[in-house]
Image (cartoon, rainbow, N blue to C red):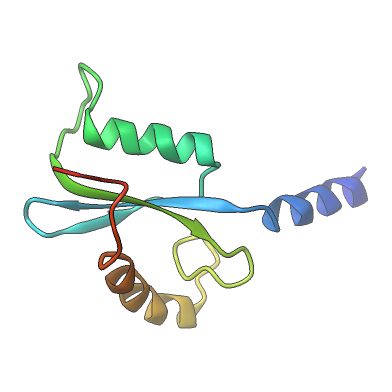
Length: 104
């Protein structure tokens, strides 16, 4: 059973994943951990138009959805790789020069 579970996790790790990146009106940038495409779109929709009663509301001015490369994504995955931490700011800066998924 453990062998099957390990193999299943390896297969999942190789699948495409998506990050939602948003910039608020104070020019602060936030980004999500990896999502499936459907969940990334749902999270982006919640940032763009928060559901009624959302406990935290911070208007965003732009939202990007990017596909992460399973073998070299520098964004948060809980793996605490120092090289990723150093690469993430440049990665985000390049991303923000691309056409956003949505902008105000």
